[in-house]
Length: 123
Image (cartoon, rainbow, N blue to C red; front, top):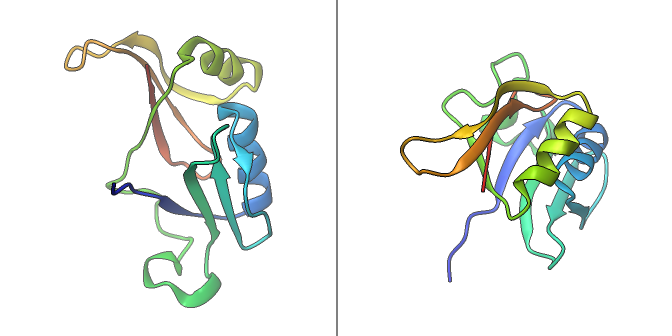
């Protein structure tokens, strides 16, 4: 099996880690100020967070650029309503409220994370 473990550059790893844990119910699997691995309840890594400028990765050196240009973080979830409730409770930056995606026929909503990344959350 092949799967993707996405790594995004963030300004504050600890703050972003808490944000994703509170919003998506993910759990820390690594922890630390420079790098974090976030996993689901089965321990599968869903998303990694990397502090801007650490380890000299060429695509993560300039935090002045627009984060995520050309990137959509697409999360497929089992409990869309529960995660939507988390988004409302946490007063997150909502781009689109829950709606049916005409292409997939699935319910989804769209928001931005702390660093401006564009997230689609779909059932």
